[in-house]
Amino acid sequence: MTVSGNHWLLMAGFLVLFMQAGFAMVEGGLCRSKNSAHTLAMTMMVYPLGCIAFWAFGFALGWGNFAASPVGPGCIASLGRGLLWLNKGIGIGGAAEHIKFGLCGAKGFFLADLDQAGIFSLFFFTMVLMNVAATIPTGAMAERWRWSNFCLYGLWVALPFGIFAHWVWGGGWLAQAGRNWGLGHGAVDFAGSGVVHAMGGMIGLAGAIALGPRIGKYAGKRAQAIPGHSVPMVVLGSLILTVGWFGFNVGWVFAATDVSIGLVAVNTILAGAAGALASMVYLQARRMKPDPSLMCNGLLAGLVAISAPCAFVDPWAAALIGAVAGVLVVLSIFFWDRVHIDDPVGAISIHGAGGLWGLIALGLLANGRYGRGWNGVLRQASAMFADGADGVRGALYGDYGQLAAQLLEAAVLAGFGFLMAYAWFKLSNRITPLRVSAEVEVQGLDLPEMGAVGYPDFTPRGIDTRRWG
Image 1: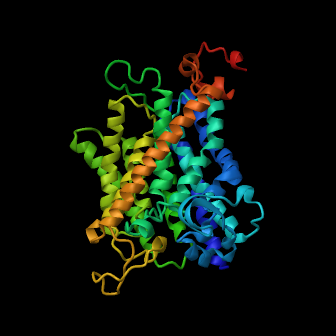
Image 2: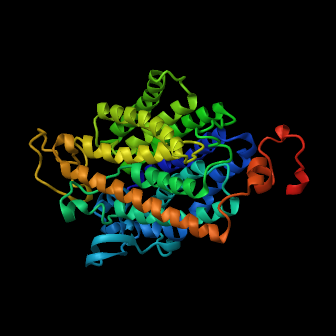
Image 3: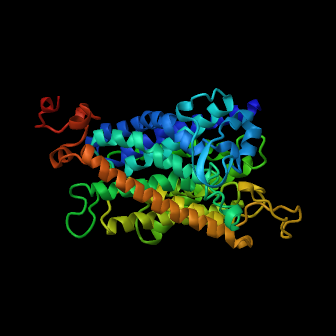
């Protein structure tokens, strides 16, 4: 076991956990003051709810057979041979330890009998990543989601995340698409544009559809603006998220000695900067004002999009990926408003659209200099590179199979994430209502749902606070 690998992963995880503060400020600022306590409480409580669920079953489903994963050996070198204890999975074909089409892990429930430092470090890091995915729908479903139903969601969300994470990160069937079907190196998602962000976006889309729009949002044929109560909170929260993103992306190199660490950091900041700038330029080209919240969305969309390809592309490509994401997020926000799907914070567009674009961008622009042997695919070195490198290559560098693998991952993610979440929200609505009453929504969710208001000095007059106890 190398101490540096465990320390590195834990420090990166601490940064990712701090992203919850950024999410709280972004989502809270973009919602109305009458819902501020409720919105911020969701972004706080989704973390402990998700943590307990991930400990109970999410980690086991995602990483229970990690020792047999094609990417497992590199992680074992960084985190120690204790990871070999993660050696049980469920799938189709092949021997038990080398399943040909992995469906989910089957060891590590409640971390039972896994007293290994490397496993604990891996659990902590993947747990905080899951909580990022879990938090995304709280923005898309804000200002009308009943608290009791939200709590059920917080205990459920580790299920789809764990299963899909196994398919891509745990050596499951999407990761095996390179070895089984010759599709490049299989599905590649370095830091989670798909597994984390697009999954959260698809769950948020399903939830927003199941909930319906906020009262008054689509009064008439056109969307009505419902401004958030604090743009300064949104900007500060976006900058906090940016700092946390370096733990999110750079953490996946697993050790500070990895040669890609500097490239990952540079590509991350370039994509975020290009996303913010592109959003501003696009708005002004359309003769619109440079809305601070939309520029923040552009920044975050650029960071989302680069998460998958950050170790595999050149800096110029990272800037291009971020710029496309910055324009795409604005177009996506306008699109969902046109079809009357209400997303108060733009989470579906930032994480859903931005995440899917990041997967596709990797399939287009990965340069082949990093990722040799990724997902167990070893090929003859490419003549394109003097040093014989043959890592993950996109279509621009001659590997159309990698683009096919990325498109496959994007399609499966969109279908699996949306359908599973939509079914869950319909089922959970039978257990406890998904949406608050119209009276509570107009009043504001803070007092009726939480028993406390976010801004007591600004509670509207005439409201009987005793009624809500």
